[in-house]
Image 1: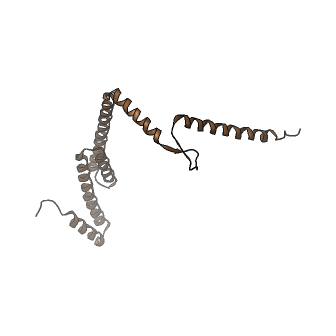
Image 2: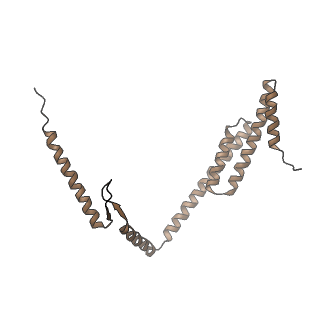
Image 3: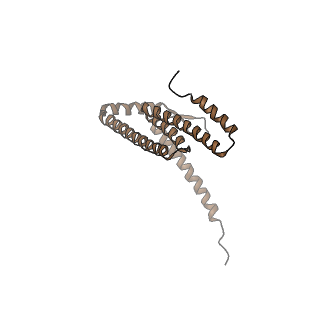
Length: 178
């Protein structure tokens, strides 16, 4: 036999007690005990999640603590939850700061030659990409800069022609009679 309580059996007995409770006081006590069991379970899960140490685990711990904060428990237990939430927020902020600092250190230590190689590699890959010329068109062109510029200029010219064609229509609107 273990030293830990059998919470499944206890919850079962408390739920059964709720069915047979003849007074509001008895129901209140049964609900209070159920809430305390749920509270202890959520606090345990939050502690386990927090001990794993990853940011996602801290988020999981926060979810458990938020659920625990919604339960009707004593003021002392509510204070413990609030303190734990603040503690986890601070841990998460420190972890994020450390992660940002590490990324900044890594990016600062990258050699310019490596950066140039990556840029050249990206340019070569982008030249091989095929993109649609006009939305809805199935025609494709290579992403050569000269070809792309020509298509942009052509589209701009077509837009300008369409706008010029609309101006005479607006000019034919008669002025109001006096």
